[in-house]
Length: 196
Ligand code: 5GP
Image 1 (cartoon, rainbow, N blue to C red):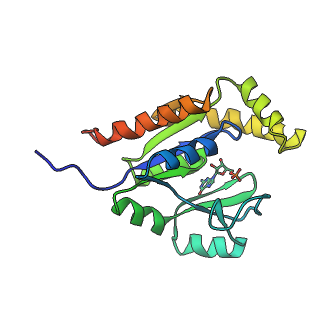
Image 2: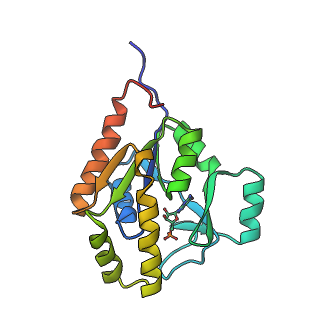
């Protein structure tokens, strides 16, 4: 009998803004000691309450471009006019240590990672429908009407990438959505065949 592989798994988690992806990812890493979140680098300025090195590494555009040129990112993309990148060294080091890495990244990033790491598991999170997404964006009171409209139009584009993903988790109730993602993670441990 072949020994169980010790390498960690990559979990790509994408979702339209407001679908609750960050809350789900936070809950997963609290529940599962074998899964950690990757901290991306971004050129977007920190929001109130965000700390450098926790939510993101907040860096200048020139530093970002230099890192991209030096191939320090496993993938990078421009999202809503800012650059975001997944640091390659953390990802590879963590996978080698046997831990799973959750990547909270957009659809472009997800597809890019999947090309390089075909065994990565792709999970898409969505609210039950667009109306619920709009309601969530409006009640969280973070964005102006113009930004909400932009996010909704972007959400429709992101949803069109759904066929690229392997799992769809509907975030109707946070607890249930977290449980569904946990089941997916657990099932990966028993997987025999690699995904193409
Ligand atoms: P926010 O600025 O609201 O935290 O994130 C905006 C979008 O950028 C989200 O969809 C988030 O998943 C995505 N994002 C965050 N980090 C990365 C990254 O390293 N790469 C890519 N491609 N997208 C990212």
